[in-house]
Image 1 (tube, rainbow, N blue to C red):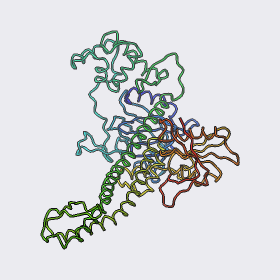
Image 2 (tube, helix red, strand yellow):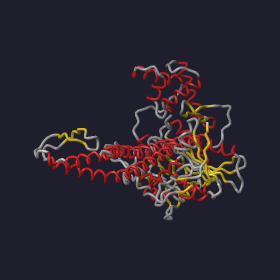
Image 3 (cartoon, rainbow, N blue to C red):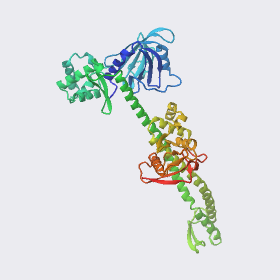
Image 4 (cartoon, rainbow, N blue to C red):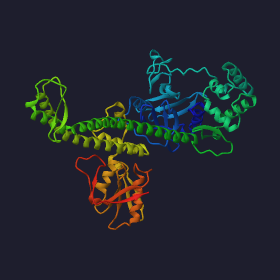
Length: 568
C-alpha cells in the first residue's frame, strides 16, 4: 500500500516521545531523494530517515547503513549549518495529512541561537523536504518549484511556505458514526459508487483505498456501503488513530497494511522498523532487477553485433573457399587465348585439362575482353587467398568474444545480489570489448563501491568429505582461484563445453577418492549453465596443468592431462 496519512500518523506517534529533546549530531544526504538525521536522545542514537522518491517515499527510523557521497550536497550543507547541534522540541502531523513537522531550537554550528522547522511532505512525486525559519520563510528545500514552472506554489529560498492544497475532508472533524455514514452516503450518490474503499479514499485525507480494503479483510466485511459496515470501519480507524500503542504493521496482498490489536504487546518502534525492512528489501530488489536488466541489455546488444559480424565472416570464408575456382578459370583462359576470339561475351566454354578435357563453362564480365577476365580472375584468387588467412584469425577472435560475453550473461543470470552484479560491472569496465559511456553507466559506476580485493575473495567455500572446496562465482574469481589461490597439486574441475565456475579441491597432500571427486563434479555442474541438463561431462585435472594464455579474457584457461566424469 502507499505510505498514506494513517501510516504517517502512526510513525510519528511512535517516535514522538522518544526523540523529543534529542540532539541532532549528524546529517547525511546519501542521494538526491534522501535525508538522514542522526539524533542522540535519552542515551541512545537514532537515525531518522526521510525518503522523497516517488516509489519509496516515507519517514521512519532506520538501522540500515547507506553510502554517503564524499562531498555533501548543497541542501545537506544547509541543514548542517542550521540544524546540527540543535534539539528537537516538537514532532507532529497535521492530522492525517502526509506531512511531518519537526521543530528545532538551540545553538547551531555558527553559535547562533535559533528556531527552525523541517517540513517533510510525503506525497508521491511531489514529496519534498523543506527548511523554514520561525517566520515561515523558506530557507532551502530538497527540491525547488515555482509558479512560473506550473506549480501552484513557490518552493524556493525566500518564499513563504504554504501548505499543500486539499479538497478532502479531515477524518478528525467527524463527530460520530452517523455523520461518517452520512458523508459516505452523500459521496456515494455524487460519485455513483457503492464501494466503501473507493468512496472513503476519495473523501477523506490520508486514508488510501488499500488501507480500507485491508480493514475490511480484518473485519470480515464486504466493500458494499451499508450502515453496519460503515460503523465498523469508522470504529476501526478511530481505534488506529486514538490507540497507537495497539497498532501494528503486517504483510497484506504482496504489500503491507496497518491493523489494530488490543491483545498484542508492541515493541518499541515496531511500525518504523517494519517499514525500514519492507522498503529496504523492496528498494534492493528493484535496484537489483534494474541493474541486472541494464547489464543484460548492454551485453546482448554487443552479442547481436558480434553474431552479425560472425555471419559476415562465415560468408566471406565461404567465398574464399572458391579461390581455387578463380585460379582455374584464369589458367584455362590464359592457356587457350590463342584459340579464343578477342571479343567481349557473357561466357565461354573450353576444355578443362584437369578434368579429362571435359567442357567447362566460365562466366565472363562482358564489359571486358577474355584476356582481361583472366587477369581479373587471378587478381580475385590472390585477394581471396590473402583474405582467407585474415578472416580465419578474425573468426577465431570473434568466436572468443562471443564465448566470453556468453559467460558474462551466465554470470549476470546467476547473480543473487547487487554485490555480485557489481563484480560483473567492474569486469565490464575493465574490458574494452564492452565500453558503455552512457549517463546510466556513469551513474552506476559512481554509485558502485566494490572493493576489488574483497570481491575476489568472496568466492564460495565449502567442505566435501573433509576436503576444502572453493568455487568461483564469476570470471575474475575463477582466475583468482586458479592462478592465485590454488596450489599445483590441488584438483581443478570444470564442466566441459559449458560456461560455469572453476572448482578447486584443496588436497593438502592427500588424494581424494573418486567418490569425493564425483561429489565435487556435481558442484561444478550445479554452478554452471548445464545445471538443468542430464549426463554432463565434467573434466578434472591437477592445477599445474591448467594454464591461462597470455592476453586471454577473464575466466578463460586451457588445460591438459584431464580425466572426465559424467554427472547425471
